[in-house]
Amino acid sequence: MSTLLADTSNPDLELLYTVNGWAKASPGWLDGLVSWIGEYGILLGLFTLCAVAWLRARHRPAAPAAVAGVLWVPLAVALAELANLPIAAIVNRPRPFLNHPGLDVLVAGKAGTHSFVSDHATMSMAVAVALFLVDRRLGALAGTLAALQGFCRIFMGVHYPTDVLGGYALATAVVLLLAPLAMAVLVPLCHALARTAAAPLITAGPYGNPRGGRRRRGARALDRPLPGPERATTADSDLAA
Image (cartoon, rainbow, N blue to C red; front, side):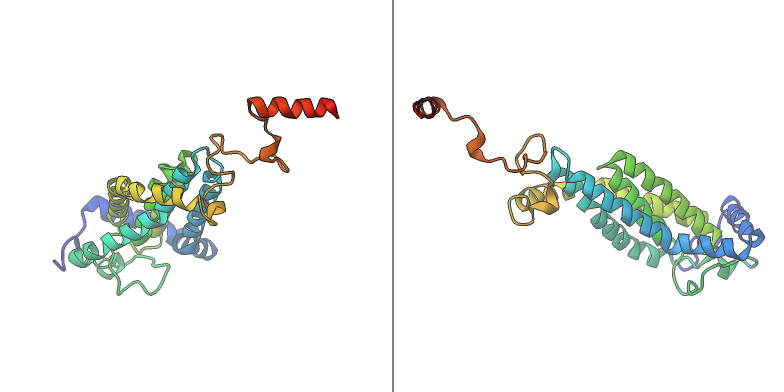
């Protein structure tokens, strides 16, 4: 299996040379910027989107279920990466610059690692798909970052286009197939946590409030109208006073 996928199809290789050729024609500062974005920047951006999703989920009417969906995001990333380990070992595809000369490699230290599937593409798409299940707007932004991540990895000369597509497919399959099972566990867990001292991590308002809003500051249970006879007794005592 060591040579499996070593010889790519012409469209795959042509696209690699085309995109990586832009790196050769670009100034050094741009190559450095794209390398940092493709290696670290997009992952930091995705982490920020997850934090925003958590803050938004806490204010939803069904906050525990929404927060459970956000918790599924990092778990989905971890499971997708675990699924990639045997795939990478079986396919054993070397990095493109090892078999195809003339590529401009923008990041060092990749020669001894597998090319298929792209870890960065897998992680970014796992975040995008899992986040889309919770918050479509943030999920769409994450999907844009995932697409940019794939472009950067090809631009940097460290992945074939099919490595990136394989990462996207693997992440999507893991997230969607395992989401029902994950939510069956995470939703009850978040409901239970909402009744403990960890409640501020789950909901921004009083747990059990159907509107999910905050209680007015200083409001007490005694501020509510008293039921029948007690209300009449209280009213009579006020008049007597």
